[in-house]
Length: 113
Picture 1 (cartoon, rainbow, N blue to C red):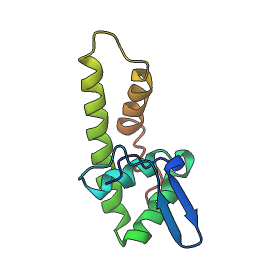
Picture 2 (cartoon, one colour; picture 1 turned 90 degrees about the vertical axis):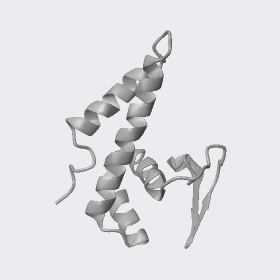
Picture 3 (cartoon, rainbow, N blue to C red; picture 1 turned 30 degrees about the vertical axis):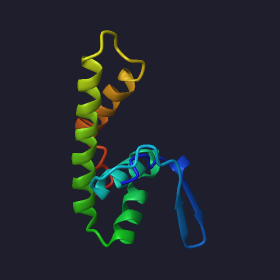
Picture 4 (tube, rainbow, N blue to C red; picture 1 turned 180 degrees about the vertical axis):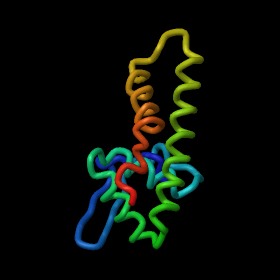
């Protein structure tokens, strides 16, 4: 997996996609990359999920479920790391907002249906 699938690391030209910035690359589940790409798409999350589902021939409900699970795992890891530090890291408030969006905002399911 690429493990850094935010929008600044993709070049798209015609039918070709080139990934950049491989310092985080590792073995992992493809859903990790799809989750990172979708979660950084902001208001376009549902559109991006539909495009990923079409491109990978994955049922969109299965994709949403996998992304939600991977998102929760990443958040749990980040929050555990933050709690282990002597001072709260600067990024902690954003990750807490992300947790709220995941749990109460149901970010992966808002556009489902």
